[in-house]
Image (cartoon, rainbow, N blue to C red; front, side):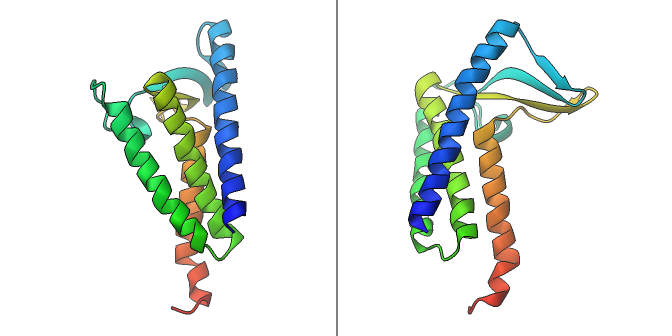
Length: 156
């Protein structure tokens, strides 16, 4: 399961980083947001904090502290991955690990995280996000679902 989870993590990280480089170029050429659907735009937003812009700070240490925290969590998740018994759990852990690593790369390169996807209804906008954020959310949902439903069939 370790190899499976790490491959999922590598794919999530690669897709995240490739999409960021490509979308930065596309949005720079467009000169601003691109409306794809009435409820979905591509935008360029730099997030110096964590999920949904929380814990933003003007400190030069913030990217390093947030990255160290994320990498510490990744270490814990890899230890969990070593013990994973199913592809479902390994895949969920791989998505969370890959997403975290993708956002750490941004913090190390730019000092903040690049977000692009803007979902909205009229003037209400969900905070912009990226593929790494989506991978983290999907992975976390997988882990919660496993905890709620799959563990019923296992010995406790």
